Length: 459
Image (cartoon, rainbow, N blue to C red; front, side, top):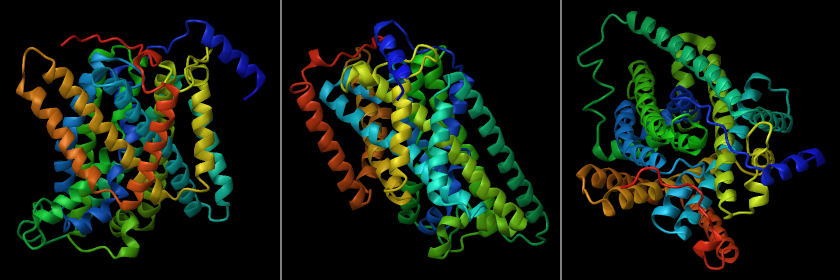
């Protein structure tokens, strides 16, 4: 970092500079949709199809209902604590600072890994278009691009997200058009043709659909990033809950339509193991030839560009929330750059980690570790919502009991079924964070960690 930047950060820590409230409900929904990705199920379509016997649309819809419980908990807690720290703040203030710190530490791993894995996959996908360009050059280019874009004001990032979301939706509509033309050319559909993607008696099994659903949940990972932008939302008490639920519902509906169309073309046929990762482009090639195949490849690239940029934006706000409360060094992580009103130090740090990690962490391992941190945060938010809106509330509502309990239980079950390697690596990260936090806060003494966000929604 240059000397000039250091001076700016120093001035930022001495003056009451804050994040700017410029994001509307529509901005929050768009940012959430781009982080989740409008084409989210395309990458895991083949894996789900093989596990669930072709019932991908069924698993997507079940997963949507399951994740809605957690989305409601996030929205409720963001209404009570409109803070950039998200799950970290919710758990710390409602349950215990030590548990909040562990939750935040798990989220740090999740949010840092997201732009990292997006850097990796964007570089790989670009090599499919330009095979002569070295991977190292592409990784550097994407990591630098994410950082430069996020170093601008947050409103600029929101406008870029608008364009990315619009482009992806257009490609999805083109895919739908090719599928409709393909189906129009079929003269005999057979009994139950249009209902078979939901239920095929020849391949249906509860065990298979359940296993497929545990994978389909990955379609929705990232919606929680909306809550990290609470301090930049124009009306966080109203808009964060609405945006979080809307992103889950819109992602579920769009994803269900995408995989339903793909299943009408492909049916319940098994994908060979070497073709699982390219399953959706293979379906696209069947209905639209190599044009649609390459268009889908490019679209998935664009989707990961938006996801990586949005994840870096959210990660910087999470680190800001932890730094401001002195859980990590405040002078660096809790500083706001006064000109752009963004935590510039954090943006630059995340970019550096994404660049370095792109050369040592594989895409598959990065995705597994993402889930480890994400579901710890999900469980923490559901627990915090239960404590605040049911345990401590004088009016005991069955909805405030059932929603967080179901959300916690579903997330815990999915977390238990993560791979052994992800559990080991994630546990090492958590233990390291606990040791660091214990030393820094002298045993997690509340007086040494100050959570600035105040509750705006009394029980």
